[in-house]
Amino acid sequence: MEETLYDNEERIERYLHGEMTPDEEAIFEEDLANDDTLRRQAEAMARIVKGMETVGGEQDRLLVEKMKTANGKKLAPVWWMSIAASLVIIFTVGYHFYDRSQTIGLGQQYAYVFSTETETLIRGEEDEDVANKLSVLFDNAANGKDLKNTISQLEELWALAQSDTYNDYTTYEPYIGWNLAIAYLRNNEKKEAKSVLKQMQLDYPEGTAIGDKVAELLKEL
Image (cartoon, rainbow, N blue to C red; front, side, top):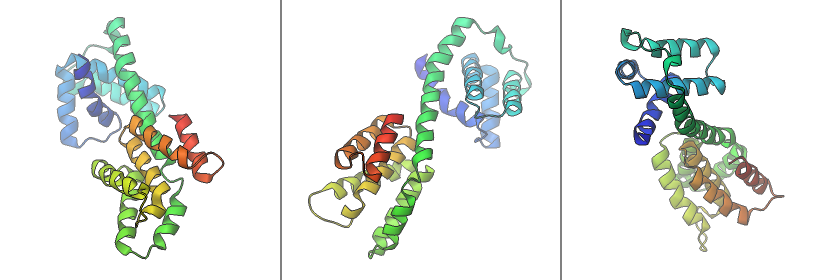
């Protein structure tokens, strides 16, 4: 049961935020018409989205109405669900959905904190390949693009930057660490982000520009 709920979560979130292609939306609405578990989960998550005010009132009303009549079939009204089933969905899937949204949202909120500093450093980089690589990776982290590959590369550079031997990435150590944490958050990997930030906190205590932001973000997490 739990595995099925979580398997559906990403599809429902994309649907609620209008991120599906027309074909994906049509398939999803057909599934809504034939899958009671998916429909109940989607209805519960729509309530949560509405409560978080991430979907406007009119849009939310239309989305819920579409879920009731998906694929042209009149479905059971949301209030006909058993109260117990509704509570299970809201507290198991709803909390997970809310936590995921909060984690990704923090990544977006803090993504550009050091953008001016990093742009200045990168522009002054003599090695054009290093400058271009960092620019692309930091931009990907900030915008949530190609996250799996971006995280993998930033992890490697983070290890290099922290090594005892000076190298092309030593100067960028705090910014590589920060952007790695941001990329983790954008990819809903809170535990990994906290691990990097706690490591940074040892090197950059509160009272420094980087240390203050690291401490602030850790408190948010």
